[in-house]
Image (tube, rainbow, N blue to C red; front, side):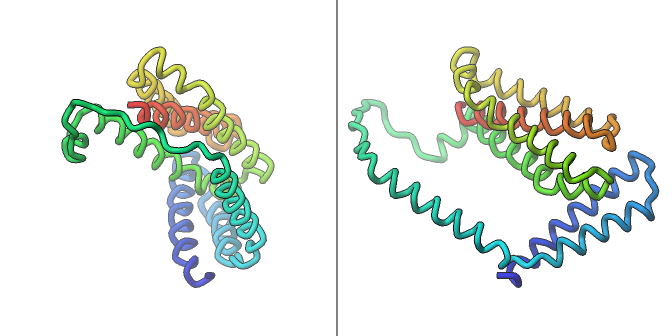
Length: 212
């Protein structure tokens, strides 16, 4: 397992190193001190024993099996067949529709952007000098911004239209990236604001794109 995971750690390390270099160039921090902190973080990450997390993996496996068993006991049955007089469309015909293209790009693009930044954010923040508490606090706000709006974004899409929800999410992304580019990312509040807009933008674009 550790051998299979080694390329993943190397790719994660490369991404974090690039993000660290960009942050140093923008903030004017001392490259030698920042490089030493980044190298230390990379060394710690490369030395992680994957098998030490087997307890967490077993818990995830148990919860997954338990969920499948609970779903099997619900007995919802099959939905009634609906007879349609319209001719069935091929998958290619559906994929060529503009509304499908916009919805797919919105859902896939927002998810990729969110995952790219979220995956290495705690490592990048700690390498930049933020404390572990500050990095986890910032990520906690990001998670709340991702999933809390999901409780009502679908209702808003029904009321105002899914296309407007997608556009709102795109605006949130733009605001978040503007904070990241022009703000002081050594300031925890600025980092937290960026992650909040990133999470809320993902929620609107992903759910809105799915509704399309």
